[in-house]
Image 1 (tube, rainbow, N blue to C red):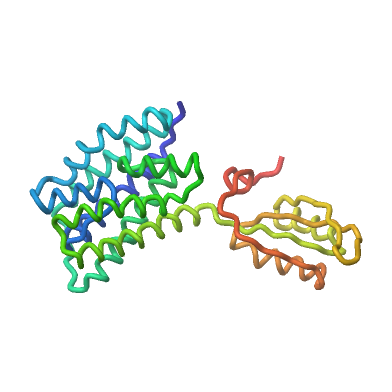
Image 2 (cartoon, rainbow, N blue to C red; image 1 turned 30 degrees about the vertical axis):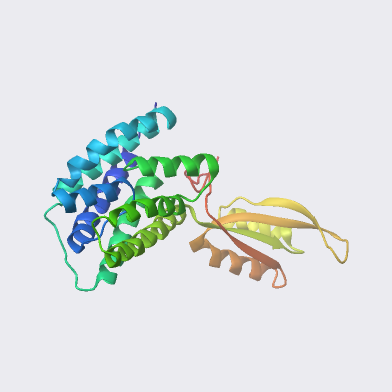
Length: 280
């Protein structure tokens, strides 16, 4: 089992952001949330129970699901996230920012929870049982974590109608929707790069310049013109977003007539992206 300090610190920071957002925007503006956290907030509204303590007690049995399915490292990261959120819910319990505009409150709530939870997920953690289920669905079925949370949270929001009026429930739905989008954005932004395919008569020179000047790897693919039937080499290269402009200028400077296709890449593993970009 290998544990690293960076993910643990990031999960704690994400949990702090989420806890602050829930106390400052959700609870103080009469909004609930999805998942176990939503049930925790609802119990706070009804019985004035400490949200941190309640969140921890409800999640203890659900954390065993993570222990059975996630592996020891992911389980420990989940425990760190769940315990951290519970602590920060108690620490920030007296922080509040009541807003006269409920829509604005729901936007702030969604963004803060989305950023915090997105960071937690980005580093392999979770903050409650619903998060564990969403993480497993993403890992094994490829479902979007944000989308999974959104639909599962609808059930909790429906239950919250026991206490909330319909207007508050609808604003909560807005917050959850925004949060789901922010979660996906935070995760995708961590990886997002650009995949570039280049068709040119100067493939050798372009490949050489990309390798030397940009220190990026290039793969040569074999292509064939659909109309002419001529064989051509196609260059495939993945670069960071901030390198795309430089790459296009490089290609244009070598072959102004080159055909360039650019696509988004949402996850990149390998030297130069997840490892140090050094030469051997």
